[in-house]
Image: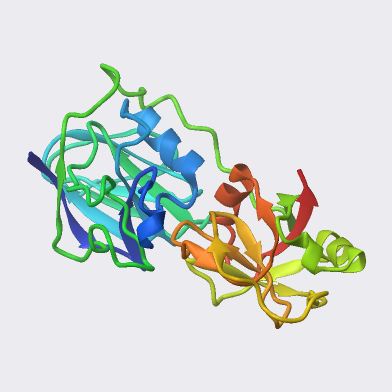
Length: 295
């Protein structure tokens, strides 16, 4: 184990995530894991790590660390400026999605994104994080996993790389998709679309929704143009839930389950997002307009 960085400022939220914690739903423990799995995997691949290696998920930038040793680091997921202050005081400017080769003493700051919400930081060899129930992911609902990062925390590295070298600084990751005025998210209907009339299902697939500010990794609330009405009265027995489930509570405002979702729920699920749509949802800020479309 060797110290790679210490945290100067964690920003709004900086948490360790990996591909998730599986096999414990029967005990009430969800999977957690990176919200945008594709971006997290790309970051690990760029520095030669296994895609399962822990990364740091950073919400809305404002994240600053100081290097204790020479290493290769990359930030993916958002489009944001990165500044590197060298020991001599020289400030170098970069952007996300490039591999950075930093030296001991360098101060690396990920600034507020121009677009995208969640950035993923990976380091060559991976972060050394003690797994809990087989995963290094922090679960906001259960509190299981390593605590969110705070100023002064030391970040240690390991040597669990997959290939012998990382990408050169000249090679860049695919740029994240800029925001569209209306973001289309693909879904598969069911399993409880029979709790809604044909007209309500059509309304769900045709109207526009706004991402509520009252959203997090547990669930993303949607503000509808027209609330979705239940066809049936009464309540469902609680049943198993997965990432991307779109529950419709009695107020007709859908809630899309994020990676830290509860393992059961009792409101009807009108549809489920595709995996790619789940990744995209993790990058949409409050107020963004979305529309659902059949996959």
